[in-house]
Every structure is written in C-alpha cells, then in structure tokens.
Length: 247
Image (tube, rainbow, N blue to C red; front, top):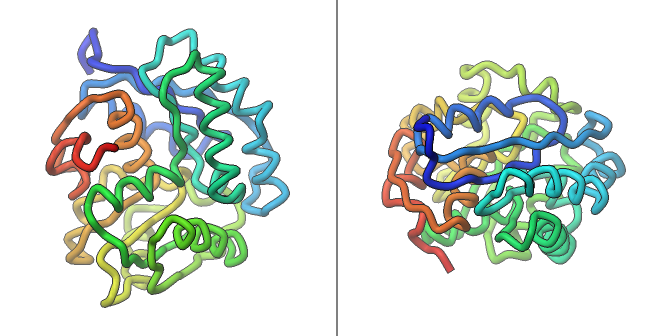
C-alpha cells in the first residue's frame, strides 16, 4: 500500500477471525482500512449478536476510529447488523456516523443490499455459515430490502472463530452445494470467513457474481468515501468501479 492512501475507511470488526482481509484489500485498492475491534461472546446466537451490535459497543469502536480521520466507517459484521432488522441496522449506522465525527457510515448487511442494487440483481442464493435460525434473519432482512432469496443454505457453524478457519476448498464446496439455477448471484454473509483471495474462483465455479461479506464491506466503505477503484480480482462488483450504482 502507498504511504499516502487515497482514502481511509474505518472498520469496526467483531473479535478476531478474518480481519487480515482488510490489510489484503488495502494493498489492492490503495486505501487505508484501520480496524477497531469490539468484543462479545463468540457465538452465532441472537442474544449474543444483539449484545455484540449494541450501541455502546459500536460507539466505542467508532470513537476510536475517529482519531484516524476516516472518510467513512463500516460496521463489518453481517449478523450483528441484520439481527436488528432494517430499522435497527439503520439506527446502528446513524449512531456510528455520529460517534465517528459525522462521516458516512454503514454496515455489512446494507453493503450487500447496495451491492445488489449496483449490479441490478434481485434474485439470490444465500450461503450462510450460521445456524439456521440466525441465517433466516438475513433472509428476512434481504426480503425487507426488496431482494428475492430463491434458496437458502446453512452450514450451522456456531462460532465466528470456527468460520475463520475454513479453508478455501471448504468455502468453495459450501458455495457450490448451496447455489440455485434461478439465483442471479450467490451471497456469502460472514465477515469471519476468508474469501477475498478466492472471489474470482468462486465466481468461475458458479458462473455468476458472488458477493462475500468482506468484499461488499470494502466496496461499501469506498463507495461512501467517494472513491472509485476497479479491481476485477475482487469480483464482478469491482469490475466497473466502486461508484457505480451510488445513491
């Protein structure tokens, strides 16, 4: 990465699992992605996720990032945002924005929705690492946002730490087993999963766009910062620049 990054995208990240993906992205896109960790119980269960995404924890992360002078901030946790529903996730983003000094803010759940709008995609297959009850809340979130989930698969993994240890082959197998012919894209919603280095391989295997949690988080942060970058190695989403579809 250059000594003078074009923009700084603050990342609020839960615990530790795949945060190294943001360092990898920084080297590709020439932006800085400082990470502020917040902590909770490492469990994919609704009460624990509600605690993880609580206002106090997000404000703490946003305030620490404010010192980095970010151009935007993203709450990089799909489950810790969609578990609040659309309205609650919007309140999360508003709170993060205020605590970070008024810069644009979002979350991974909204990043998925905005990425689908940018690609003009409405029918998707969801490949969730979470237990079924948690993954179904993401399906509901997408439905409220105008996205048609034509199929839903769950790996039933209970902790983010376990997800972070999945090999590229395991991620590829998970995606292949849960695709659907009617889906225009595959969604892989867990920022604990390492995916950035294999997005193109996932897309080649599926023959369609694949959107992953860390990928859309990076894209959303850059988009909100007004920074355009083309990096096809990060997937179809990055083929035309991060500002396409911006609203």
